[in-house]
Length: 317
Image (cartoon, rainbow, N blue to C red):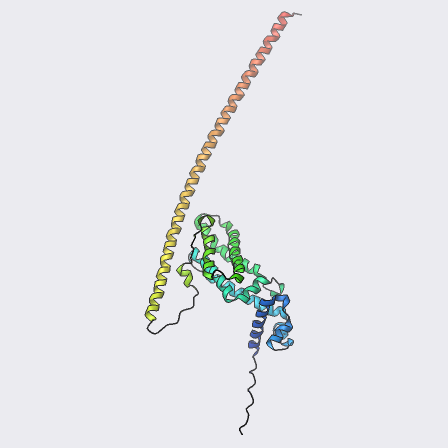
């Protein structure tokens, strides 16, 4: 009879591996139950370790939470920052919206943690502070755009808060509904932000350039290398064509805006001239009225003087 081999014992985790395991477990529990609903006992039990192990690595539940929140904030901030590195303003906006929605889709647990709690234990602030960081980057982009379009750059901080708040709140709504799809939601967000309510496109879509950003490369198939290369080249050419069209449209907007500004300046000048003429007319009328009043006063004075002389003639002393 052969000897029975003892089952190989489970490999002992290194300190770094144990730390990552606890962070992963904490992330899941915080997303499901929130900070207050998660206990240190539950984290330890799920990891099949004693509570002192968690304390050794993080000092307590607050330490686990702080690391989880910091990682999620840095991940999302990095994705948004990368999106804002695009050259064209419309592409920046599209990619930023797509980045947030992609983060929500790929890191739902992390996003739930960010929007669910604003606990001081995070050490890095709350979702509001993250939004503020993103808005400060968008502010720089908008300031340049405003300066180029003749708007007051001092308004950029206010517009940055409006824009980022709109995208962030839409993301919170989409976290649970998930309909319509990510790309369609991004297209409608950009439609409202870029075109405004008066110029909404009834069938908005994301540009080829933004659509291909962040997409994983498709695996090659035998004999398909040339076709894949042609397809990539076609997408790049299509994206460049779209950008050229956007630049033309933007230039047209600038020209129309300048024409409108010149029209408004002319209308304002005409209105100022009309106002001056009207003021001059009123002044002349007022002067004539004063002259008439003065003549009437002088005539009444003469009549009074004549009446006094007649009175003296009729009744001498």
